[in-house]
Image 1 (cartoon, rainbow, N blue to C red):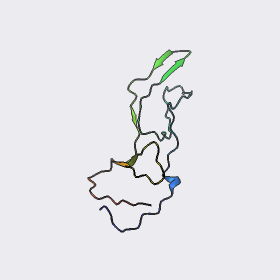
Image 2: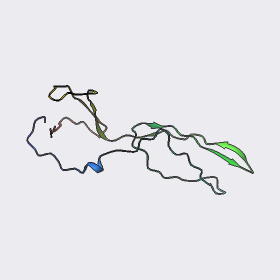
Image 3: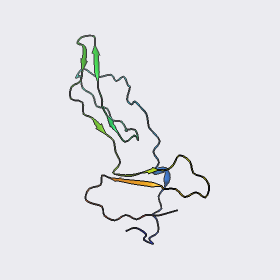
Image 4: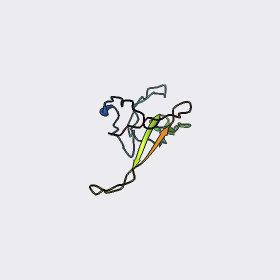
Length: 117
């Protein structure tokens, strides 16, 4: 519902701000045991994108090998907004601030509370 009088929720901005946006990720050397398998757990960067991965191995006994069927990793937030503001604004000037909301939440969302601070 647009224009409701409900008070805005109190949210810590530090929990919402994203700051890790590398161009590349996971350049690591990992030692694998004799089974030839390993598991790696990492926190993905804040960039909302797809990461395409590859892996290769070198062994003095078996030579060079490349992994097959490595999945693509898709990073996204369930809900986020983007702001499209002018590059500059003069004090007192009226301008258009376009806000786009993206929702990947389950089900259909029809109500939206908008708060202006």
